[in-house]
Image (cartoon, rainbow, N blue to C red; front, side, top):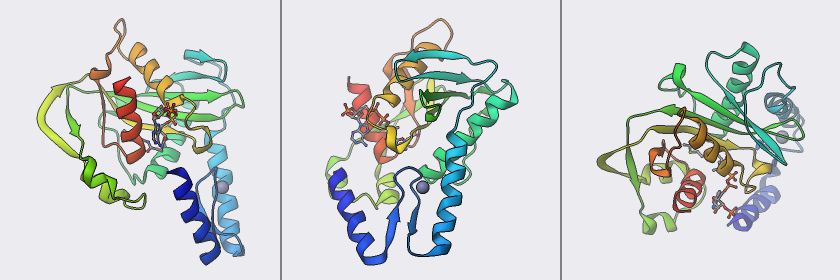
Amino acid sequence: KQDADQLIIDAGQKQFGATTCSSCGMVYSADNPEDNFQHTQFHQSFLDSIRFVGWKKERVVAEFWDGKILLVMPDDPKYATKKADEVRRVADNELGFQQVTLSRPTLAKTYLFVNTARMVVGCLIAEPIRQAYRVLQQPDRLKDMTKDDFMERHRAWCCSTVPEQALCGISRIWVFSLARRQGIATRMLDTVRSTFMYGSHLTKEEIAFSDPTPDGKLFASKYCNT
Ligand code: ACO
Ligand code: ZN
């Protein structure tokens, strides 16, 4: 799948001179000076957004050989909430969210995965919810769709009309493109389950993903079945 996508990008490069930056994700024309300039600027602000300088107080909720997970609460010091907002904006930008506000910002918990190179390579926003509608799979319709059909795929999810009880809604989950498939999203979710509600461990059924993207759906179905 990845290879097929790469081929499309390579073909695009020959035809239109377009390059996709593998870290910031921007598509630009490398032989156009103005495009190059815009990419340099965007790339820099992207790196600034995910750079982590270290905080006076860090709420470390998990530690690993390749990084740690910090929890940021809405009432935390400005330096923490500002970084959480910055990373959320990076994630929203990639998810194509324009101005999606959190349903209850004062209750949202942000989990940041900081790697050993001091970059925030993962971000997860969890909010308390009461009920959710299970996404029903439609494998046949989805099989023929291409990656470009994002909106089409997005709409293709069909939800059950029967609400089910859920306690924790995942409104965003994002992992830096170069850090994917290393279990970062899995570890962030495991950490949410053990820390989101004080004194209780949430089951996979008590977690719900809001509006999953194709990547999010693939990840979520894998995570929930294991
Ligand atoms: N395609 C197929 N399977 C996948 C994919 C994928 N793109 N991503 C994860 N999986 C499955 C795999 O089985 C994987 O295990 P494996 O690597 O051993 O095969 C398993 O899920 C666990 O994956 P992780 O490594 O824990 O996931 P990762 O850290 O790569 O993050 C994520 C997954 C968050 C979806 C990432 O791809 C991403 O940030 N994508 C762009 C943003 C996005 O679409 N986020 C979801 C939005 S939905 C929402 O926010 C509610
Ligand atoms: Zn870039």
